Image 1 (spheres, rainbow, N blue to C red):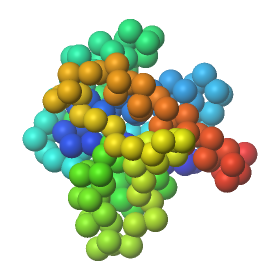
Image 2 (image 1 turned 60 degrees about the vertical axis):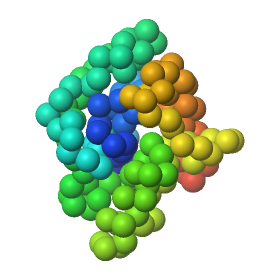
Image 3 (image 1 turned 90 degrees about the vertical axis):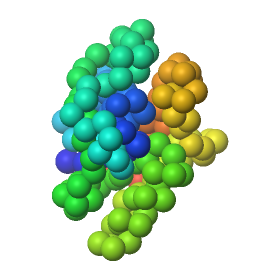
Image 4 (image 1 turned 90 degrees about the horizontal axis):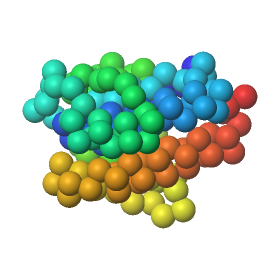
Length: 155
């Protein structure tokens, strides 16, 4: 089982969108039994809150449903995850500091590092562009699956 943890700041927009998009892809590709996917934040500022309504609405416009309750990343997440995928460089910096202390640096990537155009996923809390976030996260998740396929991890 491949354990993937998606991470953003508050865990109410980008990372739960990534978690739900990725799970939807896995179901459609018949790969769901190979993965465990989750999401969390680098901050506890939104802990206990559901997916932000505009993020949830963007997912639903694309036929993706699901729930998630925000939480902050834990030491256990670092230990159990095979891949920790950050939404952006700022959250990656936080994760890098935490992972360096425990030897988990090799697990860290940005969501869109696996695309033909590596980039940060802009925070739609500020941009209000939830469709762009959806597109970027979808691109990143597809690229990540292709990366795993090339590495032979999907057998």
